[in-house]
Amino acid sequence: MTATNKLELIIEKSLSLPGVKVSREDFLTSVFSKRKDAAQLKEIVEKGPYGAGVTRKEIDNIAKSIIHKRTLTSTSISFGAGLPGGLAMAGTIPGDVIQFYGIAMRLAQELAYLYGHHDLWLEEHLDTERARDKIIVFLGVMFGVGGSTSAIKFLSSSLSKQVLKKLPQKALTKTVYYPIIKKIAGYIGVKLTKETFAEGLSKAIPVVGGVISGSITYSTMRPMGKRLAVTLSETLVMTDEEVKEEFYELRKEFPEIIDVEFEEIEDIEV
Image 1: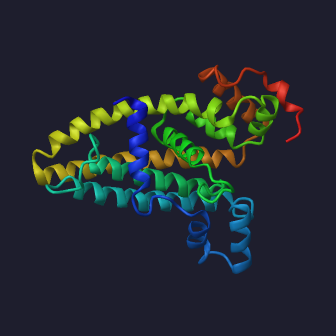
Image 2: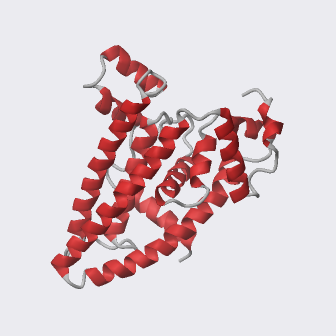
Image 3: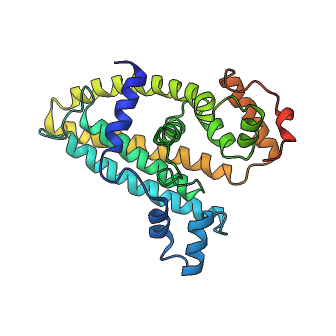
């Protein structure tokens, strides 16, 4: 099984788990209904928290709380999966790995919505492939895969739309996402092979195996969430110069994506 096929299987199986797909409106309502009045809540749903006047500091604090919650959830699930008779295998991928990525994807969506991204699952004429692509890039940031952070920062700016207007023959999902996703797939494929081997050994001793799985999950999920939260938080206050820096970082990492100079797209109306 190739790295790309393995990643596709992980995404497919994980997204099929209950609760992995997150409704933006439901999530924001649950987070802010006790913090804001009805009028403010409506504006948050319409414009996103930061656009509705919620401070960056408050958003960051909420993000920390969500990361802590999801970390505890993933740890308890991983412990159960490490015991005999735990989650069933999904092809050649252990069930607890599917659960881990499912929770990571849920966390990625929640953080994205908290920092102003649109609902991935309620867009007009929903493109499921594009939604999956965005989630994979979020995972890339969480795992620290080179180029993913610059991609999120740049694509969160209005200049990404300018690039599309400058390069009308190149579809965003194919030119920007594809090479990044290919790199992330390779990284996750290698990581998954190592994890699968390690977890297979740990489960040879049943109860200890569960503890080991839970410990590994806790030490992994929290920094993953923090890495994505920091990246998304920075997109809220990026200057034009910082956007320019991310543009060239992205082009340096993936020269096949963008072949124009920054100055060539600055004067195009969005």
